[in-house]
Image (cartoon, rainbow, N blue to C red; front, side):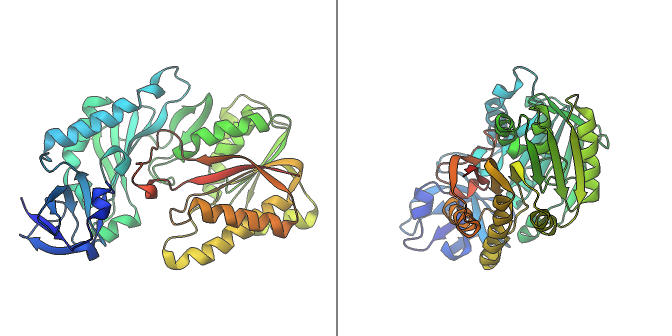
Length: 395
């Protein structure tokens, strides 16, 4: 097997079981490994540390498959990783109240670069690294074996692949192509999902637990669902008896699907409105009009794409939270999120606190929020905790 030797004092993260090895840690490459090929990792003193997937074009030069040097990375190894990940999701198969969830969550499930999401009778996959790409056929076969479905669809149309020297791809990998809209059920709420062109693999499955959590604060309330996408949080609020829900999003297509999703659910709401526009501008207009809400949900897209954009992103998060807090009625509840991996929980806390100070409002944190439990994080891989949030009450 081809091997990679690390510089002195650069093996600490591997010994701590962090799955990424950056290019600057590599001292020597013995052999000419292909993209995605498994390579042995060796410390500067010659100690074998494990096996990882080699990526010649990425700053993350190796993603670890195993920290056991004796383990062979072969078809059986990869299939077993898929089997374990799928088996860990058995808890979601019980009562039929939910049929959409994550089956494989990349590094956290020991398969770096692979996302596999279940939507009803289909599985949607993203392969974002050369290591996952190299084992695609084995992965698809394993998914079919351990989670039989009508079809597996690829949504590897993400910019992350460019960092690995990979082109974007989308299409059927196995079985039947998915319909234009897949009907799913989440905690009793019905949604239609566009897995071919929707955000991520079609729906924000990572917010499932948080959508369920806000229900307890929605009954009889006027709800603002900002950055609403296809209506997830607002429809959960409708199911809980909200008096009104105002969805705001930039995308007309997303709002059209939000309307369809609202109609799918039998819960009645006194008023449900859908406003297309820049969310910052719409919320400023609401502020100037003196509008207010009992429950405000702020679930913006990723603002920080790189370390260089983090300061600008922080200003954006502060501005939107300032607006959201100003729109809260006394005793109102704010659910606010950041899905930017570079935005640490500590920094996000500071940003929201600064917004509260500028708004001159006393805000208490009810609880801290994160991605749903089918999106686990590796304990030694803090980058896996990308979604963070707060559920707050205004004074």
